Image (cartoon, rainbow, N blue to C red; front, side, top):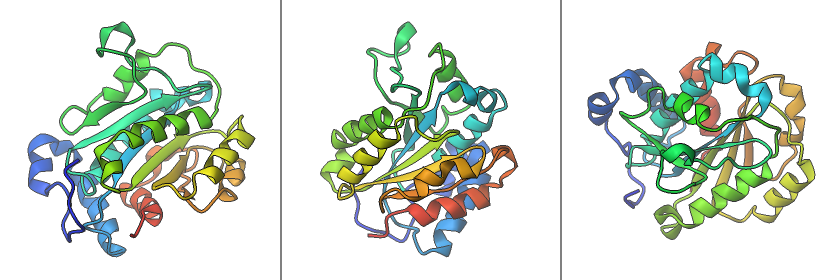
Length: 239
């Protein structure tokens, strides 16, 4: 991320998106419209995507819902961060280690999904990870914090905006709550995007003030880009 002060322009222009990822133009435009409605064009943030890889998520990988969410978040991030990348990580009972099979030089919790290299990327990463598991949030949150603290965005006091996708309440609810309560003053915003029955995520609505929830229901592919973005922007830091 190149550090800039607040500007009334998107981090990456429509022309650059069109040149590197033309299939994302409509998503990029919809994200921009949602940001303008709340006067947040020009806001900068380091955007993360954390993906649930518990066994019940299998259908959402298979039908393309997770890939679509990744594309949507990459398009959204293009307005907030000028590097054209989103660090993506996967969790179940633990944070998955990406890098097995020689894909990367060393195992790591996050890899960048970038404009122009995004198509089919989620399936590629998912299929490299083997067995799916349960649903524990805290290991993933700790991995985000570690990655963010080592970033140039952290050094520049640019906030992290973490899109945390899941289809189940945490099995480690107490540990998750304790972590979030202990990090309320940190420059990280956790925006949950639950797939599935909204009532099972009531626990999230009672978590600390640095947490937001943008539930998308059982059929996330039916939710328009514009509607997803209108929910996401409510969680963006305004200062």
